[in-house]
Length: 279
Image (cartoon, rainbow, N blue to C red; front, side, top):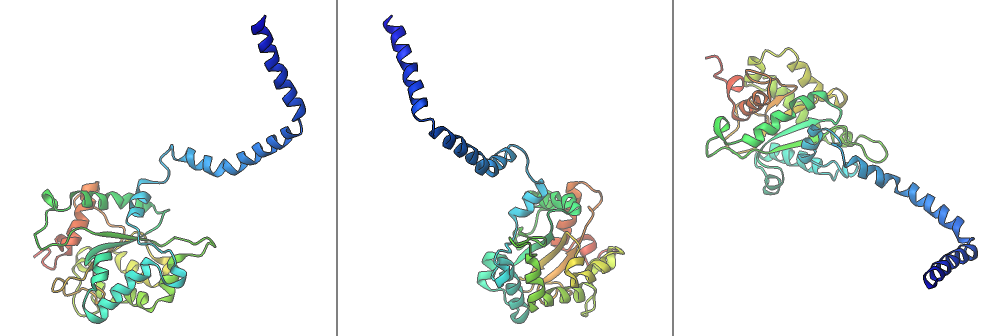
């Protein structure tokens, strides 16, 4: 009886509490509803984390991204990169700060999130990075270590403005970078450009010329930049651009290693990138 009485008293107290605090219950219900509403974005993000959100290519290129944050004020890392290259074009000396942050020799690739050609070729970059300096991707002791940077040309700020446009349209040094690249890669600056002559790519000239129109730029567009003293080729631009690749194919195949081989040949000046090709 004692046990039954204790259980009965417990439920009586619960019932009394519900009766006396009935006014609180609507508040609890409304509060619960708002809590659910406000937690939806976090729940969505949590659920998405269960899956492979975004492509592997976007994740890889994002890891190499030079930031466009604060491009509206020309204070982004991309602005800093083009300032670095512009200073080199005027002085023929790579600044110590720039070398530390960006390197003396590196690939710079323009990409977008929604870009099938970028998806198709990112493993070429990753395969080269993973194997650089090993086996058939060995380099001599004087060669620079592999460095790779990307710029997402479709990046936008919270107002929906394209951030790359601020860098591309409003910086004279950026315009000079692209215009001079075209001149040197087409062999119009004096020295012939082996890749332009050897690749026999009918779209290459058009893709180069489109670099003067931001909306027509092909992605991926990859610049090989080499600012090391006495290492430039005769056709290297004053900004250090040695080669430019667009939607490149693999050398002797189309798998990831073949694409990596094309990039490696570009980096080392071999095969179709050599002035001795076919001789």
